[in-house]
Length: 171
Image 1 (tube, rainbow, N blue to C red):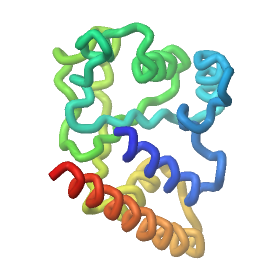
Image 2: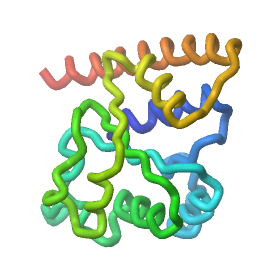
Image 3: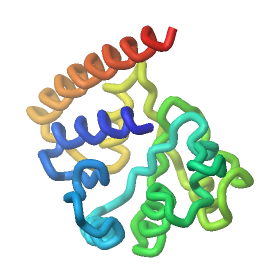
């Protein structure tokens, strides 16, 4: 979900203002303690968007074990920190239509499978991100909404262009 997560983060920052999201890859200063920065960010947030892409639960670490079973995995740490800090988790399904099976996750992460999820599809990026903001009760005034839709259209086009380039290189 790396590329998708980056685009979603960029889109949300364009729509809601720079710095309005926490994205570990760009929000943590090199040399900072990941757990300290994560807990600081979670103490200031309304919810955590858990981006779940195709085969998310099966991605392996360096020893070919599903990474979510590794206690030092950053995704696992982020989800557990949100649970411990009572931050609502919103599973965002990226190009998949259901949450993982509970049996495919470590026991500590299984409750995520019972949460109401939201789907974002590549071919409906504009509509889906707009609908996500509405579901999360992040209102935009009419002028902001027009600007937001243009940002979403631009982001979707850039995303599609990048995706098509990646796909053509893989052939």
